[in-house]
Amino acid sequence: MAECLRFICRACGKNIESWSDGNPYYIDASVGKQYAHHPDHERLAICTGNDAPHLCLTCGNEFVVDSSAPIKHCPECSSLNIADTFHLSGRHCPVCPAGYFEIDPDFGCIS
Image 1 (cartoon, rainbow, N blue to C red):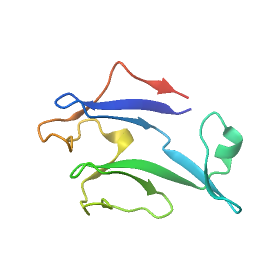
Image 2 (image 1 turned 45 degrees about the vertical axis):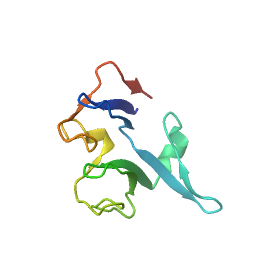
Image 3 (image 1 turned 60 degrees about the vertical axis):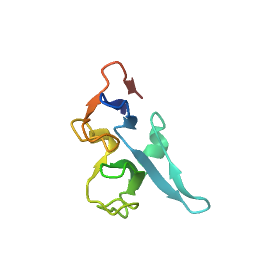
Image 4 (image 1 turned 135 degrees about the vertical axis):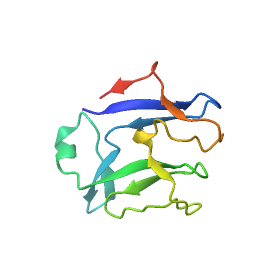
């Protein structure tokens, strides 16, 4: 089971939705990377990696970090100030320096 949360900056309204399980994938020899999500348990069982959505808290760039080749910096600005988008609660908003991300209590999904 996976959970989706929406994180929102109350100062500027920037919001990001993120799933707890990221983007699990397996490699199909004929077509390459294939993603699998709930409730497809057969495909999830053969997953070998995960593309986890991340946010640069310096420049606001959204990108994925592949578990097979992890990076620790933003590919856009090289900042080390990055976060998995499922763990944004309490983190500074890159759009407005005064804002912080909070979990939106009026939103939630489970798969």
